Image (cartoon, rainbow, N blue to C red; front, side):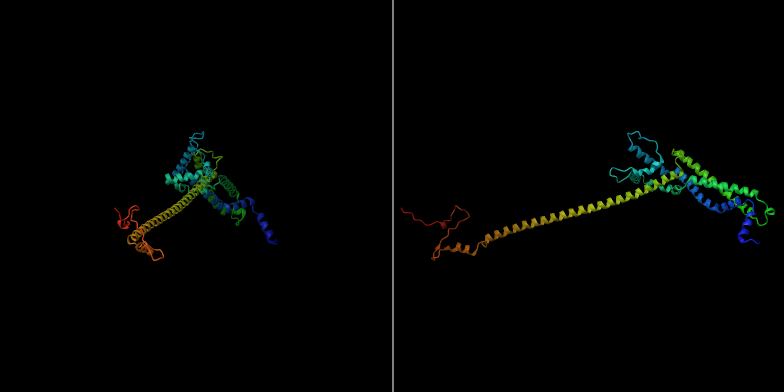
Length: 344
């Protein structure tokens, strides 16, 4: 009682038997729910993703098309007529470009699927857990399970070596609190362990089905490549739609421009035809007016009419008769011939 509070606490802690193991067990009890929450969703996602890939009919049809394209491109070479390809090749489809460096093999694959196999375009719906499985690390899960296993074993030892209340006192509640926790924690650990084994078994089946070495191609890498392929596939689809929309917009603009030019040419042609028609009509009208003027005599001036009627005034009040010509330059009328007497 004469000690200060800090010293009293140190004395009390020193009287507890197996203090360090107990502190470790208490720490594990504190972090156990967090550890379960960290790995359980990952195991569930990995298990579901393995089942989806194996049973995904649309996805496997997509793989067949990729193999078909590869064999077509490699026809005649030693790589032609292949029976399969590595899954890790899927993300590399974006690296194979056309001669214009505008589209990739993946864009071409998407175009083929949309035009000829439209039902396969939704293959991504079969791989709903693929994104989450891409973050699943088997090493991390195994490490967490080992920590849980070790902590539970140490807790069993602490509970087995724990003294009873008569030996440790009425205030020692370690066994009373930790025994129920140990039972529940063991049950959860066994469940997680069984789930993890199931996920590993499914991934082993995938390794056999797609013929790859699981020790060199981890589950995380496998689903990361699938996620990358799926995301790139739908990105290529969006880009194809944008390209088609741009081409359609350009085509409509070109058609509108050609239509406007055609209409302009037609207007000019109609205008020219109208001008020519008016010119012909005007010329015809002029000729009609000229004929009418000739017939009525209005085509001649007043002086000309006067000359026709009375001759030309010479200035000495004598009029010189005019010689009128008929329509023929060589024929004269009888009236115009001079009178000549013939002497016998």
